[in-house]
Every structure is written in C-alpha cells, then in structure tokens.
Amino acid sequence: MCSAKTPHDLAHLQGNPDVREEVQVVDFDTLAIIDAVVTNVNEWGCCVTSEHVEELYKNIGIRLSGSRKLSKAHVTSVKGNDAAVVFSSSESSVSDKRREKRNDVKIPVTIADLEGITEITGVIVDAAKNGCRVKAEGLTAMPEEVLLTMNKFEKPVVAEFAWRNDRSAGLRLLWNRTLEETGSCEGADASEDAVPETEDA
Image (cartoon, rainbow, N blue to C red; front, side, top):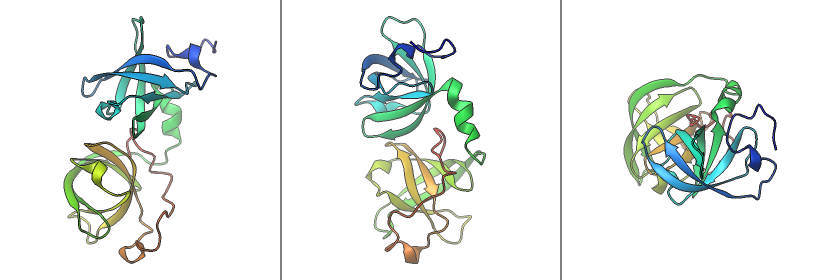
C-alpha cells in the first residue's frame, strides 16, 4: 500500500507495473465514457490503454470497478491505444517544470508535409514560444515533421508532433530548423519547453 497522502483510488496498484486493472474513463471535456485498462501506476500518474483512447481529450476521471469515486487526471500524450496521464494533484509539479505559459488563441493554420504535397487546415487553440496545440481533421495521416503556415509569419515554421489524435495535436516548434535543412536534419532535437499540454503542447 502507498502513503496516505496519495490522492487517487489506484494506490493499491503502485509499485506493480505489470498489474492491469479494468476501469472506466470519463472525459470531462467531451463527456465520452470508455472502458480501459490501467497499468504502470505510480504516485503521479499511470498508463491508460483502450482501443477508444483517441476519444479522450484532456481532463478525465478514472473509475475503478465498484468505486463511487473518480480519480481526476489529465492526458499528457496519446500513442496508439495508450494514453499517458498525470493525476490532478501532480499537475502543479509537472507544470512547474514548464518554463513558459500557454495563451489561449484562435489562429487559422495550414499544416503540410515538408514537401508541401499534402496539407490540411486547422486552428491553433493555444500557443507559446516553443509549442502549440492545434485542432484539425486528419492529423494522424500527417508525417512526424510538418510545416505550419500562418498569416502572421512570413515563412512556414517547421514543427514536430509531441502527441496527436484524429482531431487535435500538440506540436513542438523547431525554430532552429529551416526549409533548406529539412532534408538533412531528421530527428533534430526540439526544445523541452514544448511539453504537450494536455499538457497543452
């Protein structure tokens, strides 16, 4: 058992990364409810696995079978059928590691592959110097690195996905990259400031 200060219902799973437990997950933003499995539970977060994980947005509640309570958490990244989540009580410590504040915005953006062959349109809904979150359709079909074109910038900005699902994504802005370098700098390091926000990158 964990310390009494642990603020979630999954304390009995801590220290047992291979133990799986079935749960229901409620998304407070979209009101979606999915069946899932939690693993890798520790004092600050866990992994949520479900074939419907893409329906989760940011603010969620995790309910154990038979429990009358929800453990509040935030989705920080989504990959395949897995979502990494941070318990709400740990959010402040995670946020403290960020060196910049995100601003709510509504900026039209075109997202294209580096060759400019495929492009989709969307909206940047929050932004900071080194990262942003966008809403658009078809984000999962785009490559890892993309070009963001906005009216306020003279040139496209190179970016890479930190996390994404079909309708939204967090992007790291690679200000040190230029279009001329994109063919030879694959995998260049991005700033750590652009932690996904949702965490909101």
